[in-house]
Image (cartoon, rainbow, N blue to C red):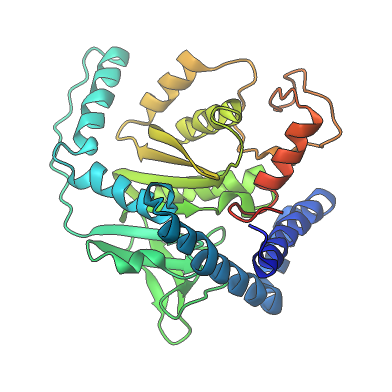
Length: 335
């Protein structure tokens, strides 16, 4: 897309992400993030840009081109419906699969399973911006962001918010702030273009661990990450994400490559050892418990020797250009 406004908006988003990563390399990442969250003017500009990009360009492009199958919003909605409400819900298929793995680990295993009751799907949209899922009546949506672009979005810094054993989120209604979340409360949590916003792998892992704590057992985490490269080009990176999330206690349901994004669904396992088992069987030499994105690596550094937690990427100059475009900020607007 060559639209000047679209390119300007995309450039603003990318510059914020780049500045955060650069600052986190030279300063304490936690201090960098807290300073960023306090920068009200920057966050407002970021939220406005994100809102315009999503509603004027991404969503409209999908409507005009009839590529609904490439809409990240539609993908999340259909994935949740298939998992919880399909003719044969994926929830129960993967429950049986996990049970078989658990029995392979422990021959004496026996578990009395209970039905998983779902009316409205209780969904937490983290980094929501403009609350796109509120349009679907079969979802009970809580939308949060550090820079809400709509009145229906609650302010919350997901990295810092507390989790307790309470029945409902603790909110300040006047300030539109969520102060505390209840553990094991949500059926689904969405990270749409969120993890690459966070400047360090450790912060991304903390985000996923918090999602694990907030999901009900057998609930799902849906992750959408920018990826404009060809099918399979980032296979190692995505497999290492699967490895890292399995160590937390997630089992992968599916991964799909759409235009400009890779989309993943992970299930909070009833038995965390099922994920550990997968890691033991499928771990390859490059795999480490880390959530990297390509620009975490020094672009001028040659391929790793598999030491120090880096993934072995053999890259050409063309690859580097694609990585910068695909992961420096957000997809859908060519720079």
